[in-house]
Image (cartoon, rainbow, N blue to C red; front, side, top):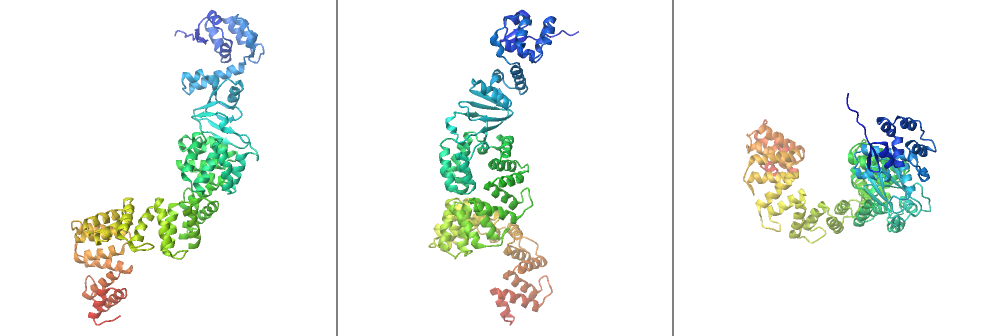
Amino acid sequence: MAKKIRFPLKINGADVRTIEELRENFDLEGVLGYFANGKLVIWLRDRYYNGEADAIENLSSADEKLSKKICSILKVEYSEEASDIDIESVKRRNEKIALLKQLDESEQLIAKVDAVAFNQDDLLDILDTGTEKMIYLCQGDFEVPLTIKNITYVGTDNPSVLLRAYDNVDFSSLNLKFVDIYYGWDTSSVSSADNLYQAENLFNLGKYDESIKMLEKLVQTDNPRACWLLRVILYFVKNESDRAYNLGKKSADLGYIIACDSYAEISLRTLERLSEKGDAIATNTIGCVYSRKGEGKKIQYFKKAIEQGYFLSEFNLGDCYYKGDEVEKDLTLAAKWYEKAAERGHKFAQNSIGNCYYYGNGVEENNEKAVYWYKKAAESDIADACESLARCYEKGYGVKQDYQKSFEWRRKGAELGAIWSIANLGWHYDHGNGVDQNYQTALKWYKKASELGNATAQRNMAIFYYYGYGVDVDYHEAAKWYLKAAEGGNMDAQESIAYCYQLGNGVEQNYQKAIEWRRKGADNGNNTCISNLGWHYQYGKGVTQDYGKAFEYYKKASDNGDDWAKNKLGEFYENGYGVTADIQEAIKWYKEAAKLGNEDAKASLERLGESL
């Protein structure tokens, strides 16, 4: 038979093994705890104190004289001061200790069990004592009242915490600190007299300047939600990105869950609780969390946030419809939501709806409306909108053609980092459009865009070196930039680098590499590449000579309008290369090529005594 293990009671830090030791170290609250969890009776029976065990076992925790009776049974002096000890509180304390042990919490936290709350009742009981200045919130759902000052709240195991705001609360005066907690700001109890309520109402009405005035004052009181709302206006509507960033950081440093930039640390439960109370910003944030995690559900939250009045969700929903993200792609709905957000001042939405009108995506193409929205977005420093507006002025789309204004908007776009604007400033100087022609300045802008990876600028760099525009002719440098542009997908550069390999200009002559790049260019739709693949097969350059394949490539390029390929078809029919000789068919193709200005075709017609 195994030896029975008799556990001691832990009383006042001492291991108690006998009833005498129990009396010597007696602590009523500790003994009540052992009574509540049944261990007192077990301890007594293990030591054959059966009389005491029976008496204790017959007691009821609801007995008002419970403490006095336990003292009597154990033969210790009872103090009337001990009557204040609540058995239910003792029982709850033991439960919390057990829960902390299950969570594998440190002994240090277990020693602070009286300051640990697992639920709202625990929190209120701790606050009622008025003795704890550091309270540990563990796991549960909490509403922290802002009427009690000078408390530090520490989060353990991801609690969900709301701060229950009251009218015109001065958060900075409360001296509340939050450690490992991102909380929600619950405004469901405030009235219309609350300044934040009024500022937010102006925000929702799109009266941003009035809202800003009120929010600026609230920011001085460290109101975290006010910091975030002001950040939204400054970032999405106004042109103050740096200050917006600082306000967002301040809001996050204060512990506001909406401002947390690490979605891994966000408690969705906290956001859900706020959403259920009508908090549109929280609802939108839930959608953003699901979007970042790729777990679906974002559409329903963006729609709910729109119903609750949040304009950022209009843009977010528009983006989902535009990209077909978790919904069937629908450009009409995308344009609808983009325009709604744009009308409420959302600068990114203004650029997006501008694109919709420019390209006819979801709306009828309308360059005037495109220009209207591009200009609003560009004035808010959206770099891409600056380039789009510049393009409209360059082409005369929706506005009178004006190279000077095109140049000015591109200069602003370049300052904001728009790579296409940087590249196209080179185009302005290259061709003297809106500025005096200056190849050196053009090259400077082309180089800057090239170094940022713009393939068109890289090709233009190559052209300058190949033909000596503003620099000495340098085939090696030209080939270097043609190759970079070709590798970047520029189909014209793919033909150009192929030509370099064909002639051995700047690279070692290599017909196979020329063919390789022309195939890539052909796949990308470059008609010259298609036509020149015919040349390779006609003359057997890098491939086995094959008039049949040459004819196929020339015919394909000809169908796409290439005059050189049409002339080649005339040559093939005249000489019977890969086809039956047919002088009338040859004349037909020579005439088509000649109409497109091909001089070789004109000479052939003259040689054959034919005219256009």
